[in-house]
Length: 454
Image (cartoon, rainbow, N blue to C red; front, side, top):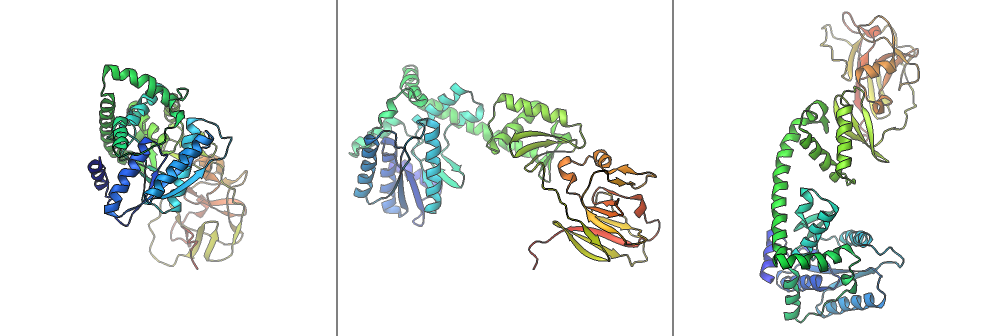
């Protein structure tokens, strides 16, 4: 077993004397076997081990004895041990236990500035996990089972015993005269995993004694399939993503299966609950909302929305940003800071007719008879503008709708006004009143403010 664990460590470049590793240590057969193996290897390789024991405080004196056993093993083998005891009264569920362990591991990872966390999952655990997921309903990704290496937020997690069965572990403990804890709750079949272990798997082994190997091979096939899918999805994504958002017209041209795969991956990445019903709901929302210029939103959580318009598909974290109420008076040429932007107005001094920018650019060449009563602000109710090329005025709200400006962006658009009439909705539309038929008088530009300046 030592040779195979060494091979695992070399595979992930973990054989370094400068590294510090944490080891999840319940004191049971699996974790004691793993810690003992790592201790023997570390004596030659020089990396540091810190064992972590979390007492869930569910079983009174029995749990105290188990902690004492962990303390005795670590003391005898000169291994640093860190223990914590959870407060009484926590719900006795598998979910709560898992969440508290993860919190404990993440806290310790930062505390010790660790290079990795070792957990003692085996291929027997992998069998239980996959059967559990099958009983609850899973896709191909769920068949990947427990991975050899993964991440828990910023924690790098390694599982060096994934190729060993529970039988292998027990044999190692016996041969090496280890005395592991024997948690009595592991035999309580009211817990789903225990029921699967003692009832389901034992029956499956009457059909195939090597069921753990069969399931592990299934996991490896599923991982391979997922890697192939991931590779081709990445190529598709390159063609349909621009500036961090999905191009709606290209996305809805994909087959329903591929669209749903993107939706499922998104939900997983955002750590959101998902099932086939939720995926279908989002699929229908995207395809129904794809015709709207100014877009529609779908609530995903209390502070996250999915936005879909004719142009883009993206997420919004602040659906109703704080209204900008400041108003800046323009008195002469120069620079004016407005919220997080810089507005510049300069005299046009060239005798050459400029190449006029498009209306959605943050630059304009204009004819202005006077700078009197010029202000910068954001929209207010009833704002009017005479769009470039039109004879009459129109409500700014209608202009935004016609231009497909998303609702959540409208209050952030800088407006140049004169006597309360809009002359320029920056990046959206210029007023006909600023048309320069020949040489312009002024150049208007808007830039992002450098908040680090000075």
